[in-house]
Image (cartoon, rainbow, N blue to C red; front, side, top):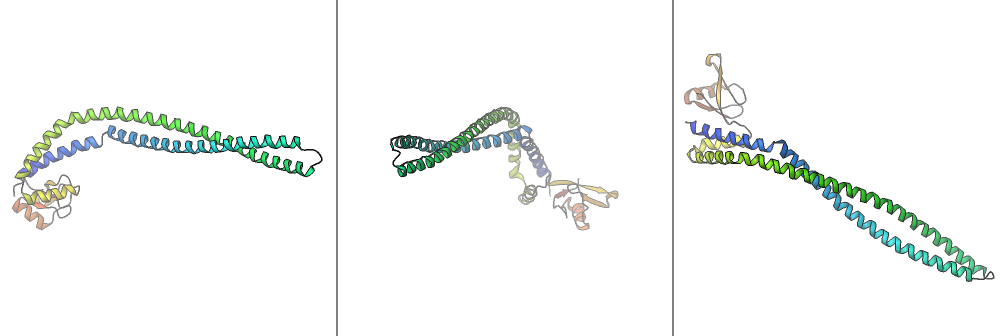
Length: 240
């Protein structure tokens, strides 16, 4: 079984994987992902603060209207109290009771409006902070993207060349052998085709991939055919 073509294919395949891994693990790529996450988080916060601000505005409008109506009613009750003679004690008492009740309600509204004002100030501050944070990470993202795109552009011609070279080899590979190779690569065992390692003047052969010794049966196959599968990791092992 001739492995020369598969070894040539593997060489191009490994170089491609190395270059892709270099791109995937580049610090700028990580910086891009972090900036994107931070920007999305800031954007989500802004949307939440906008909804909170809308609710605060609605509460303020409702409370303000209630407060205005209360003040108007308060003025009317005070006028009625002045117009009420001292002889009608029951009527005066009723008006005073309403005034006290209304004063308590208006006081609660005033307090709620004050609290809502503080809440509104806090939301505005938090909104501005999220806006500034979003802008900061948006700028970081575009700066990192510009530099990362330049980094990738430098490697794209070589990647295209290697891909074309590797893919041109594919039709000339033994289907069964390539299927075994592909299964190993998909399982994360790279390189999938490795040279045998020998010690004790050829008495012991081992897999250069996982380092474990071959069984006598696999050793015999390797010596007879020049190729075998590792008993442990199933890599394709060849002997020069």
